Image (tube, rainbow, N blue to C red):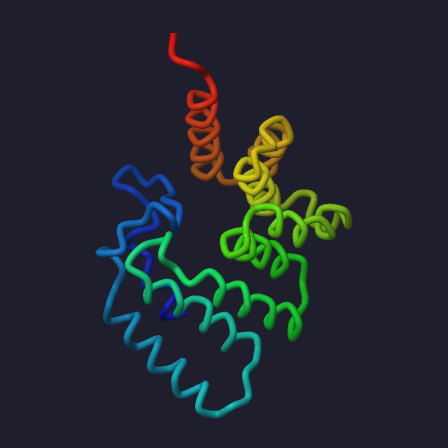
Length: 181
């Protein structure tokens, strides 16, 4: 929880709009909370009996080790999510693993992880599933399918702030797709 909470000040902009991890100002992350969380994680690792919470903490600990989102060790994050999925399987863990795999090994690899979750229908109303799907499709160059997935992500998102953030992202994406007049 310390590691997760260390990002709290960077998660929203001055207007209260959500800021995605990739766009967060890491200078706003609490170094004290990161140090405290890492110390607790190190003590837990020394016990040599990892469980789901320890794995989640290990995932959270990877992010502040990188100076930027792009420099994050996504291979390590994907491997940790793989272990979490093995020890504590759930469709939500698979969504997160798909995102990490997509960043580590490319969007097609992430889509392959996400396919069974989508096919199961178990998380049909879960906005993050559709957001992950849309992002992976966009990054894979599957623009038409991504457009449909973005619409589904917006529809499945209950939070008005998150819905507005997705709508802004789609609007920006649409402007990039159109040639200048």
